[in-house]
Image 1 (cartoon, rainbow, N blue to C red):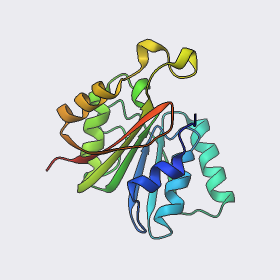
Image 2: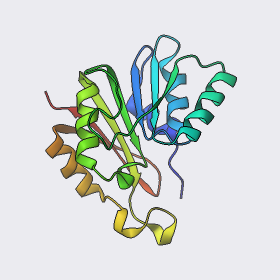
Image 3: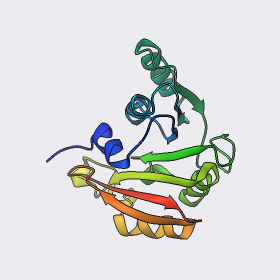
Length: 177
């Protein structure tokens, strides 16, 4: 059994040099840092989180790694316009291990839709179950089928599933134009 690997998951997404990426609930920065390496110096990664101390750590790691293409943003994606990014400003949104934590899931998905370009895509990686307490509490888990329903209602179209490890599911959705 394997845990979810941000580099492997992003490789399946097909990030390219010059893309703009928003990492909702950036946490420790694993996805933001991996995305920054993939989009290169001509790209941009917005690491968005509600916890200032996590953002400070991401900023420090990015600086020490010589990555100037990561911008940390304090924001609450559970609120309308919570990312504070402009409309249609990013190519990709990453939602990793945050769906189960969101109080207002529909609001967060509308925020992702708002900031995504017309050709935009979103990578969703979340826990498939509680796994006896290894993952989130059973009551907080968003099962794969429920995730599909939430994204369809919000205006996304499923592109494909990805292999996100033994404990997680992964889906790429695109903006339904």
